[in-house]
Each structure stands twice: as structure tokens, then as C-alpha cells.
Length: 195
Image 1 (spheres, rainbow, N blue to C red):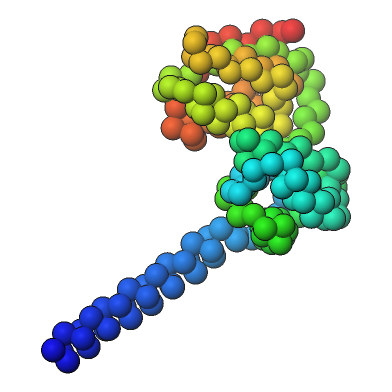
Image 2 (image 1 turned 120 degrees about the horizontal axis):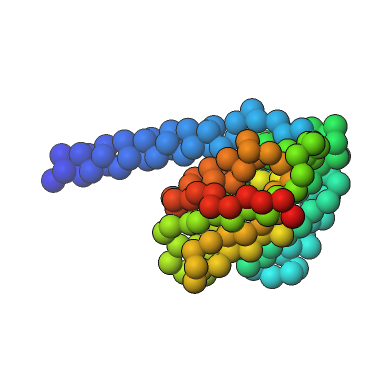
């Protein structure tokens, strides 16, 4: 009987130690040395449920030096944070501020918010395969809004398309496709014409 108890205790200890190290590895990967400079930053946040939550989070993030503007979509759990042109913020600082506000930061991605190109604005239509519900639509909209060149994003579940204005060139249009495909959908640009 003592052997069974000792073996059980040893197994539990091993599981605890393995879990402890796995958790620290995940945190280490999340808190990379990424530094965002003069970018539009998309932060996915768990725990947002009401305008009061958004206000508390916005207050914390606005205290950061270099923040120009903040947009929070409570229902989608997404924060769009715009930095001033030469401002820099480390990903670890953003994660810390979100946690201080009482929420859990997930993905943090940055895109250059300033697109200054000679290319004229184009109306881009993407064909998207794999969307099945309004949650898919919301995820695609958020991903496309996270790309610096994208404006006026509209995603239609019925015809499996997204339309938007892209202020960049073909390399920026490629980012649009990649953003959708990173969600697990298939995407291709079917039209890109001048506005």
C-alpha cells in the first residue's frame, strides 16, 4: 500500500514539474523581445465583457508613452492601438499593462500604420473559402483591419467575399491574403481596381 501511495505521489510530482516548465516555456514564447515602432498594433484580449471593461483597459494603455489612439471592440475581444510615428513599445510592456488591467493578453501583432506610397487607393475584393458563421466573419474583419493599408473593411458571409480599400501596393495586398490565411481560411484577390 505504501508503495502505491509513493508511486502516486511521485507521478503527481512529475506532472506538476512538467506543467510548471511547460507554463514557463509558453510565457517565455509569449513575452518575446518584439518591439513595435510607429505601428498599428492588434491585441487579442480575453475577459472583455462590457464598456466598463473597455474603459479600464483603455485607461491603462493610454498611460503608455507614444500611444496616439486606441479602439476597443468589446464583443470581439480586440484592441487596436495606434502609436505615434517614432514611438516604440515592447510587446512585454503591452502584455504587462493588459494584465494590470485585469485581462489576459493573447496574440499581439503589429502592422505599419503609416502607408505612404505613390500607388493610388484600390478597391480590393477577396474571395474567402471556409467561413461558416458570423464568428468567422468577425475574425476575418479583425484580421483585415489589423493590416495597416486596409480601410472600410466589409466581409459578406453569403457570397464569401471581403471588400475593402487598400492604400498600399501589391505587397500590401499580399498581406491581406496572408492575414486571412493565417486564420485557416483560403483567400485570393479576385479584383483590385482604382477607386
